[in-house]
Every structure is written in structure tokens, then in C-alpha cells.
Length: 115
Length: 114
Image (tube, rainbow over all chains, first blue to last red; front, side, top):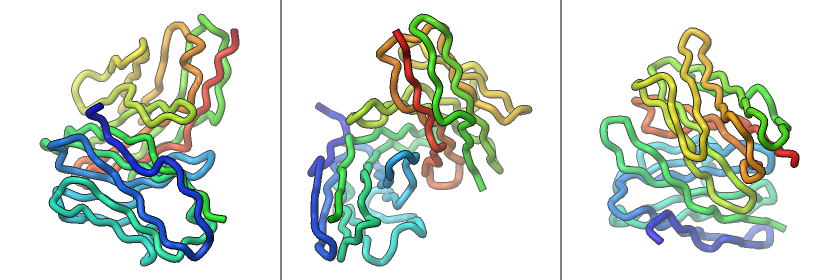
């Protein structure tokens, strides 16, 4: 399978714990995006990387959230001191940027439940 | 700022009848527009995209959408619904020059009755 993969698919944690999610993009895709989707809503942009550089962060991304993309390959999204409001589906997407005509391909998501 | 409004949160059709899912957008620039579909417990799948070429865009599974600049609309249609079309559909805008990030509508849940 050469699509975008995300691990874990499901995560249940207690409030106050730290969690880390991983995203493996389609190989050779230079852009990687993170989105968050809550029940009954469309996904909302969190942050994106061009290669290893993090170029934009949404105001939704509080200082408890951090994302990395070392070496421009896979990416991790860490949430520190989780809160119940962090419960959501976290989606990763990747694309190949060529003059603004890119298409983003999404992974299956990681569903987080904070108790 | 760019935004997307999906005019119906839920649409119900009978199998074999036409599907119309409505979307209006707001964008300061020439937009790229997309429709994605999300089946339960599955990832988002691209149905079709518009990027300033032909205004009538054909996608997968018989879906198509027409870009109407004067009406700022990008409605999704299909001539004949199939049971497997039941899913959540998202209209999405991406502005060139905004890093490619996608702005999603609230979604329209499509139900197909036998």
C-alpha cells in the first residue's frame, strides 16, 4: 500500500497524559498537513510542512501541541497534558507541490479519546 | 478570507434518482475547489477537483461538479444514486498562495433509500 498511513488508529488516554501520533506520507511528497476533525464537523487545518520546515501553524494549535517532520519524511504530532477537548480525529495528508496545483491525499486518521 | 458553505447538512434520495449537493464558496483569489467523500470509518477520498481549467469537472463514480464564478457555487451532482454513495461529502476550497491548506465545509450527509 503506497497511501498515507497513520499510527495508531485509535488512542484512549487519561486527561493530563501525553500522546504522540505518527504519519507516514506518500513517498516523495514534499508537503505534509495535519488536520483535526471533531464529531459532525469538517476537518480544520492545524499545521503543515514543506519538506522538514514547518511553514504555518493554526491558532488552533496551542502550545501543548508540537509537530515535527525530521528529514522531511514521516511526521509526529505530540499533545502534552491532554484535555477532554482534545478528543477528535487527527488526520494527516500529503501532497506534491507543483505550482499550486497540488492534491492532498489523506490517511485514515487517528481517533483520540481523552477520558 | 476564504470560506465554504454547504447549504444542506443532510440530503436523502432514493436509489436511482439524481443527487444534488450544494456548495457556495468565498475566496479572494482564483480558488482551487474540491469535493471529498468520507465513508464511515474510512479516510477522506478525493472525488474531483477544479483548478481553473474546464468549468465542468468530472470525478470518480459518476460524480461531477460545475464551477460557476458568477454564483460562487460548486455544486456536486450525480445522475443516478447508488446505495454505496451513502456517506459524508465535503466541499473544500484552497487558495493559491495560502500554502495549499484546505478549508472544509461543514459536510453534507447523503442517505440513499432503497
